[in-house]
Length: 145
Image (cartoon, rainbow, N blue to C red; front, side, top):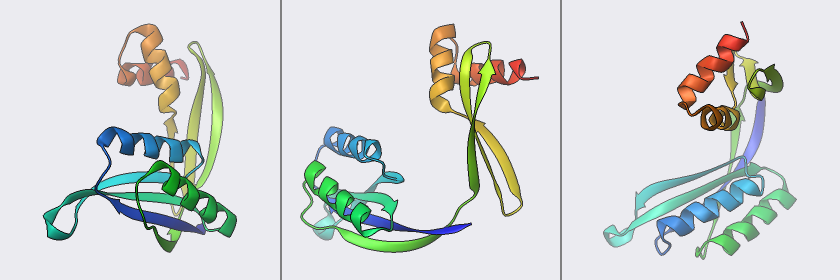
């Protein structure tokens, strides 16, 4: 399967790590497909962060995220890149386990098929059982056999 996405990016050299993390979190909360923060070096050797926001390639969605990036960051300019991407078909199931509902993401396509238990559900179980996330994964998988 293929689709098109818009990548909005800007270089930021005047925000703290905490402020950048908050901006990335808010952009994800607003529905960005992905947000990344990459360390880069700007002119004159200045360290900075490249903020990349992936969103749908639709005018209204791009405009909304441009406004959000300007709201949550100090950038004065945003670059837009349109990319085609290959994606796997994705479904999410809810599994009944002795530890409560656990979501499972299943992907397939291009000769690949795999599944993954939702981290948030595993971390909830890990906290409740006072175990590691890896142990919670094993508990859940063992209960499904």
